[in-house]
Image (cartoon, rainbow over all chains, first blue to last red; front, side, top):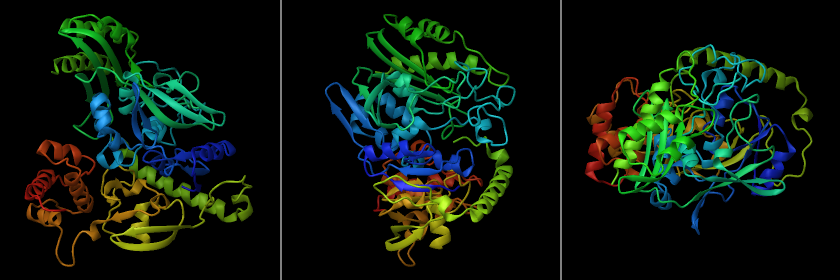
Length: 326
Length: 207
């Protein structure tokens, strides 16, 4: 683990430093990056420490809440604005990692974390994400944790985040600073499917910095639920997770937002199921029908076919929990 | 984090050792000028490979002016340079919690924090809890409730336990278990650890 280290004092400075050296990366909390560097999975030439940039604030202005990219996962999960407007985000954050890690990990870093596919982590194994062209070890290997949606012949890894699943469901946007100024993209357009370029997790361009995440204020507070299914009760990555956020009028669903984690290379938004649920009564039958719609096109591998059953069950259960909330 | 990688931990560390050894050899024969490739104008000084950086850090109430390489983790700094070996290196990957310390009052995994990223911060380790010969109430409670067997995870458990109460996350046994999930105990002392935390929480003293 050898590298050069420099602290950036402004966002503009950070972006220009990154642009100057292609083999440099930003470091924020470091919880994933330092681990990957210790294992030799990544070996950047230079770390640009962005922790002193003023990007920790969480503010409400107009009809949106803006969260700085350096806000800590623990701070976001317990921030009054987040608890009041986006309880779903708070639940998802608290379902991820441990409190020690949440006290280090940032919003931007959470978005940038790499897959936990064991073939990506094991540097003697083939992995198209780590080393393009070497093949996918997981495809014919131990693929219990892997994708059932949107995978390609090159990669069947999943994105590990819980926070990102909630942000995808909440119609968030990402503000990105580059050499030419700021740009804004939908959160659901930030992460990518593997396709022929599994080495690219997201649509950041070289030299760009995530500065903020924006979430439009919504009316999902009463009916939000994050269901995470994992191998132990806490502190494990999701086998399947479901973020459900609903608006209800009586027992009728007037608006639905659904996303899944642990099933694809990116947070997997369930738009067909959302459209189906709009205007429907909150019944078990409708939940199961929505789940069946969401599962269209799912494809399992040798060890993860259980997800074809677990995922629709989880969707129906999350909807049940979200709708039964007072 | 999942422990799915643990079965390969032995091979991993062996490979890493070999890799690092060969990297050291390569660097040893590279001229210094190569290591410091030409830089554009930057607003901060760049620390090169193995180049030590100044670091001001307060540990257990004592200020230190140190000089550390960027690759040194906070855990290694505490253990190897300051000889505070109470914080343990368990997995060294943020999965076990044995390295838990407080930084500016908040608990973190010191194995995943680069020491140079803690400039100007206040660190508290297990060695900073007792007042002279008087143990911290959480240390007393761990002894009273048999909150350990082999003791390796204990410094991390105690640092985490204190933070758990201070954060307001010790309001029920279920909440304590959830918020202590980042500290693994292979001996399985969990019920006794929970008992110790409940007692300290209920005593309501200042921690």
